[in-house]
Image (cartoon, rainbow, N blue to C red; front, top):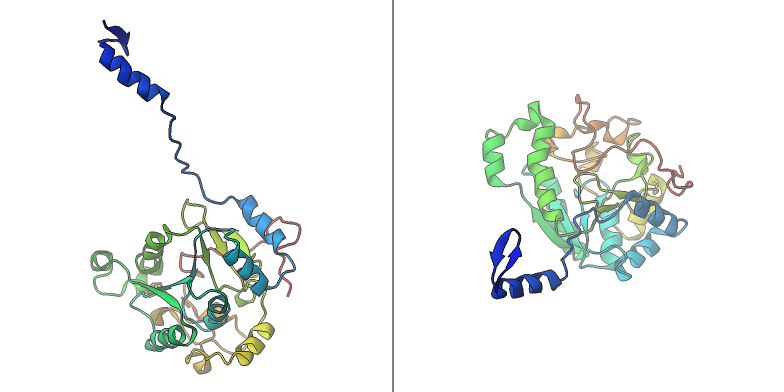
Length: 279
Ligand code: SF4
């Protein structure tokens, strides 16, 4: 005997299947962001006054944040963070965006630090098809640096970061006026996933970095002594004069200050002073 189901005549067998479906709990897929701005504020307050080493040990061992990867340019001051992280956990993946436009000195420096610190390196290249279609002659950096960074940095990182809940960056507040309000924890706004971005060196000064480098005999990037205090891809990095903003040699002549994987930070977060720069 049939019953009216969804406006049609249904058999007993149809009703059995319908009842089974109706009884099954509905799976809920949470597609919302992993972290909210309030989580970043909470973490900044939680680790307020605690050393960088303590903070990193805690987030690695307590699994507070989930899967974490360090993103490094192997630039002028990258080695301190790479040393800090690898001395706590050598398994943390270290992502390098191999844009195809780096100085040969940077690639050699990457290999040296990987060997010296035992890093778990993930070398990311841009998609060949993207480069062929959108930067066939390799000169996009000269007329559209945002587009070039998008193909060579943003897209490969976006794809890789789908595996992680948070990234670690080596940015420091003193590097430029667009970074001077940098918090230790912030929401990664490069996509809608709401990953956390961790800046362990946010409040470090040059006066803290230098003794650390001496104490652990950390090799410098070979281009620093040639007048490059901030080092990115070779076509977009210039020497900087004494006393100039260290990042003023990046994309010189353009109003571009970040490569698209970071946003400028110009105002402290409203978190009761936890993120105020200390210098
Ligand atoms: S930094 Fe320059 S060369 Fe490197 S990806 Fe960006 S625009 Fe291209």
